[in-house]
Image 1 (spheres, rainbow, N blue to C red):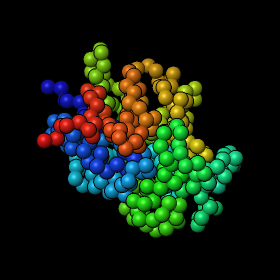
Image 2 (image 1 turned 120 degrees about the vertical axis):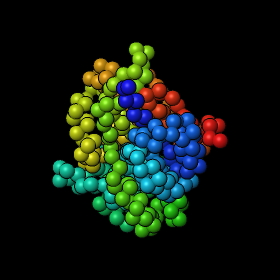
Image 3 (image 1 turned 90 degrees about the horizontal axis):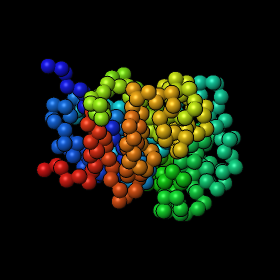
Image 4 (image 1 turned 45 degrees about the vertical axis):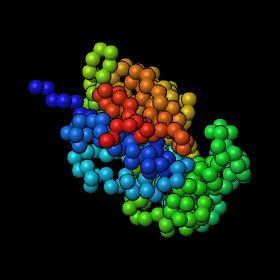
Length: 309
C-alpha cells in the first residue's frame, strides 16, 4: 500500500489572539485524523505579535508545542511584525555586507516625524523597522484598517502591554524572557519543502512548497530571492517578502509551472488560487477568524468552527 501523504498545516497570522489560537488548535485536532495530526508538519506563517491583547501568551503557546507534540515538525516564519519586534530587541543578525543597521533609516527618513520613530535607549544601532515598531505615530486613526492605531504604525502598543510595560519603553528589552528572545531569534524568513502533496483537479500531485510571510516578488530571480531570505539579509530597509503587497501577491512567472505551492499569510485575506495560497483571514481584527489550511485536501479550518466536542 502506498504511504499516505504527510499532512501539512499552514496557520495564518495570529496577532496576539491567544484564545483564537487555542480554539484553532483544538479544531485542527478534531478535524484531522489523530495519527496524521500527531506527525504533521505545522508551518506558522508569521505575525504572532501586535494588535491583539496577548502576544506574550501566544509566544508561550508556540514555544510549548514541540514538547506537547514531539512527532510534529514546527516551522515558525518571521512576519513583518515579528521582524520589527526582533529589531527593537536587538535580535537581528548584523548585515552581511558590513553595513550598519542604522544605514536602513536613510531611505525612509522623510517619514520619521510622521511615524514618530523610537529615539530611546539603544536606537542608534537599531534597524529601521524596530524604530518604527516602537515609535509613536502622530495620527490616531488608521483609515486603511478602519481602526485606531495602538501606539505605533505596527500597533505594537498591545505587545508592550502584554509584557507589562508601556508602549515605546526600553524596559521591554528586559521584560521579554530569554525563551521568547530565543524564539524570535530562531524564526526563519522562508521555509522550503521538496515533496508536499496537494489535491488538484487532476488528482493528488507531488510538488515543492515555499512558505514566506508575504510572498515572492514578481520579475526578480527566484533563487536570488530565496538566497537573501535564507541568509536573513538585514541590510534591506523594507523586506518585500515579509511586508510587500501587490508586488508579492502572485506566484512569480518563473514558478508558474504548477509544480511549486507558494503559501503566505500577511494580506488580511483568504485567497486560494491554484498553487498560490494566502491564509490570513484574520488580519489582526478582533472580529475576524484565524484560519489554517490543511494539505493535501486544502481544507480551511477556523478558530470559529464548532468542531471540538
